[in-house]
Length: 216
Image (cartoon, rainbow, N blue to C red):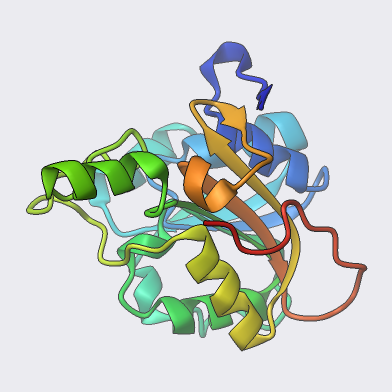
């Protein structure tokens, strides 16, 4: 493992996402929350664009930060956006909270040249141990909720997501796996808590992938 940069308490996955995005890119952040990621990308990568968020108080926080945000439900679709409207569409820690994940990703790949997806890995060894030894739903730093108050409706692993991309013909350009703020280079499906994928719907560039293949 190698330590991810965490200057100024920026979350490691934000740093990873920032490294995947070209300077000055147009972005759409789906489920942007209070806008911390958008604000970070605007500062560090001079990005332009907007977010969509359902939670009203989170929308107000975005507005306070001077961010362009729409109050709306990302599950309603992105029909108002023409094809290729953005350089990057971001789904960071939001894909597991939507019921129509398949349709939403199709829409994201339509309106964005590339899509960045970050999610907690349900197959992480800590989650497996809690299920096996305690017989209880996992509670981890990446999955901090109890079963009755969790916003998550999907519980996927890294292998699940790779299988999904293969089935859909989605190209994985790059992937990074994290645990405790460090990158995981070995057996990510077992050892990583969080995954970040860079995707495209076409073969516009040669596939660059980290940790190919399935593990554990």
